[in-house]
Image 1 (tube, one colour):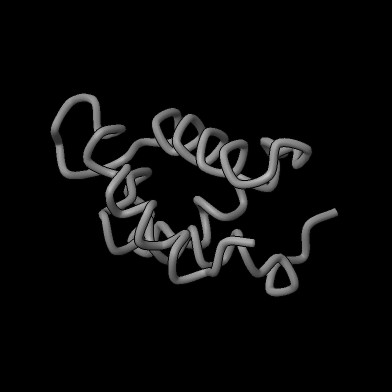
Image 2 (cartoon, one colour):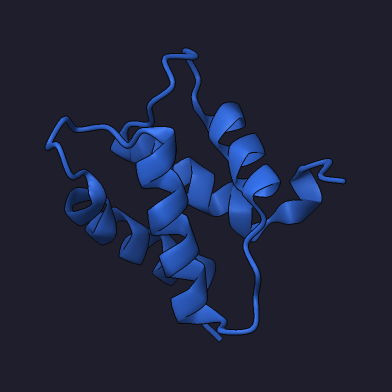
Length: 89
């Protein structure tokens, strides 16, 4: 099993490779791609739901600009790993 710290570290490394336009941010589409790939890598049987990703993105997009900084992305990974904090139905 991969630890939360390992996942966040891996996510930070991936952030740059998925920031396709080199803007320093991930837009919602980039976010969905990287999160899906990260979690498929960790747990092949885990299915990432788009509604869950959208909720995590919205929570972590602190200023509502529809993009995540590297730090916001790290928080998104942490939240995604702790679904108990989300009221996803």
